[in-house]
Length: 266
Ligand code: IPD
Ligand code: CA
Ligand code: CA
Image (cartoon, rainbow, N blue to C red):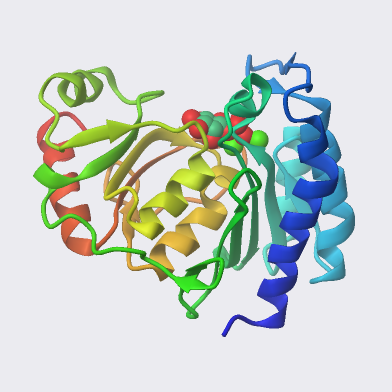
């Protein structure tokens, strides 16, 4: 049974997607940020809607992807005892191109740990959510949805080749240790796919904290294990790109990490 707070966060993600994001699917125009990445006015409007609504659930500040980095850093340092971290649209390139795979990602973080995590896919009406110690769910069904692959050789792997060190990327492309590979273009949802065991293992060469803050909790509560590429725990802080390695369970994580280490992870 999920807590009232978690249910309110799920409802907020669903409402913002329905009212602010979906009316603009297939018509939103692309804009380019200074770093070359894309955004739309819909990303900004969804962020504003979440900034207004989330503090009604827990009255703490909201740190969003679409804010200036100086503001993100100030909010992060002021909000150590409680802060929302949001990615209003994760998968903006998909959203702009009409590829039906993107999500709203919301995490509530206190003392460096995600306490609530919600990722909502409006195209499929799938809400993935978890609270610390309470298990992980997809629309009320406990995760994972299936037993993960027994071995890496049988695994379906999510691999986003962006920012993966070249020797490792070459080895992954030419000597892949898994059965098959996918890259869907929304890291927050990819974390949830590991939680559901739709993906058995996952690798991304550099994510921002709003890409993984919600998904790490959802995956962990579903039994997944993760670390950075060097084996250290994920480091949450704005302005920093974090490489992530995930296995749907401890055995898959270990096998995946061993292979990555033997092929240029460090
Ligand atoms: C991006 C997506 C993408 C990942 C990028 C992210 P955005 O987020 O999650 O899958 O490869 O690293 O920046 O820009 O669509 O919110
Ligand atoms: Ca993102
Ligand atoms: Ca985004």
